[in-house]
Length: 267
Image (cartoon, rainbow, N blue to C red; front, side, top):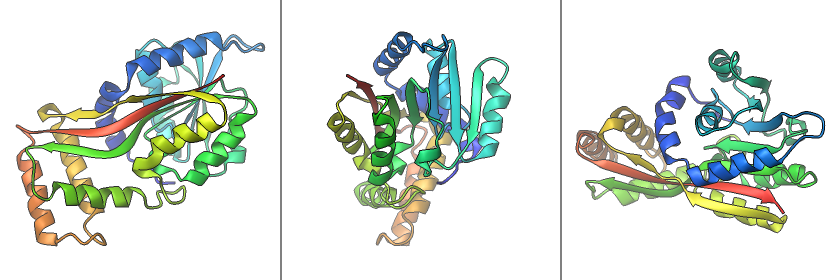
């Protein structure tokens, strides 16, 4: 699986928190309060692709407490950063693990499995295997910030639609978990969980970016342009002009990028 820099994760965290659907978070917290472990009063949340602990920070800020956070990521540097930031304030178990080896993931005893901006990078096979692993225990899943393939820029540019189509095609390429579902992730995840008898709630969680998010917008524009620069039939000069236009309009423009949050509870 791919890893991300601490700088990028920090840069996007504010937009992620603002976008995260708070109604579903309330339901997550209610579920955790009801799921009492007969062995321990602590509730366990396993956060896959945990990075530096963004989900931990978001849920703690919104009222989560007295939880055991089991953070799982392939990148040991990100986990070390999570421990540096929170090791004295939260009960954290850190596991450096390849998420692809689903049978070895530390899911035992979990009351809920969380992931943020992860499942749109995953394949259908990955999601099927993970659901099969947790189905016997009917563990809840909270999957936030799954990209849905929509991006609306203001002011508009004639190349916006072509760039978006190319980017969405790139989002379906292998990100380390097999061919990614990309924009199709939420629909697939919802159907797969409902087929296993889960009650699934889906809520929009779009990024709403404006001038205050200039640095994030610039990184996003640069990243999109780089992703679609080869193999998608876009003229290099036109793409360069699009990139310059988008950056020039950041102070007065805005951008909405669609995401969905998913909460699946066992019946």
